[in-house]
Image (cartoon, rainbow, N blue to C red):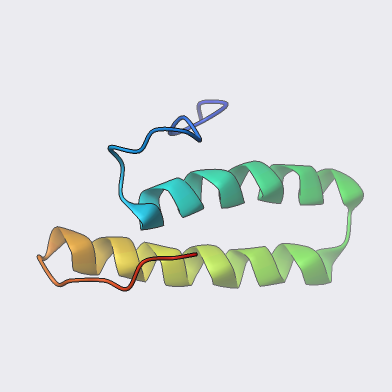
Amino acid sequence: MPDRPLPAGDESASAAARAAARCLEAREAIGQVGDPTLQALFDLLLLQIGRNLAKELQGEPQIALK
C-alpha cells in the first residue's frame, strides 16, 4: 500500500477520494495507538466513504464532504 493514495491537496480528486486518503492516513496512526474501538470506528467511516466512491463511479451525484 502506498504511503499516500492521493495527495491531500489534489483538488482534481473527488471530495470522497480525498477524505478516503486522509482517513487511511489517520487509520494507520490509530493502529499505532492500539485502540480497537477507534480502529473499528475508522473502518466504519472508510466503509461509508467507499460506498460514496462507488456511487460516484456509477454516476450518482454526491453531497460534498466538509
